[in-house]
Image (cartoon, rainbow, N blue to C red; front, side, top):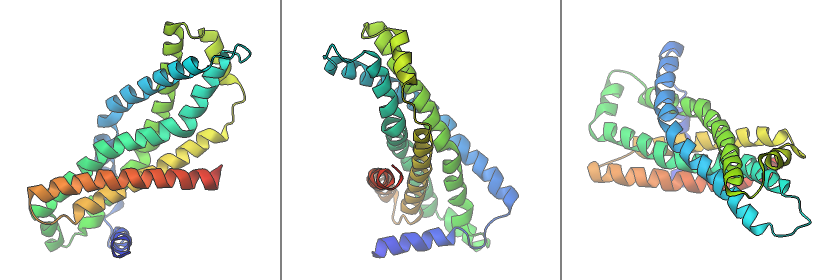
Length: 242
């Protein structure tokens, strides 16, 4: 409870004595490039192969001749949109982005750069952390949408190349019984996960004490706590929104 209370106080400090909108906008764009653009490659690779593996494994288990092969495309689509794209992408980003945020802020803390900002009268939490959270809100949904497309495309390639089903059967399955709300649900989850990853990682890095060893520990704790928070939030969102 003490840690949770400190985390809430940390979040409240982000909006006190905030920076000007122009500075906040510029820093948010810079952070969005670091968080989003630099993560496109790993998200693309992971999502494409997850879709391919999902298609192959569903085909392997779908042995009943009475079930049409187009069901594979339907199942890949549902698994990708509801769970794989938002959750797996966010877990991958927690490892890449979360550790980077915690390590960067931790290094600034132990080298007294954060203290220097405070001496100059700048709210260091608002200046350093708030742009990271806003940037995560901006780029996480974009990366999740990219992951959805590439995962479904990966399933299409795997199904066609392996001979599990034809491209037309896969597309037929993709189009069957589509529920548009599932896209909205996935994007809502991506926003929630974005906040958790950025806020938890920033908290761990901002309050780092000691030396280089503690910076490494803060990065590890940031990733671990972010992944646990994502999984808990995933269950809560599913219970409340589905």
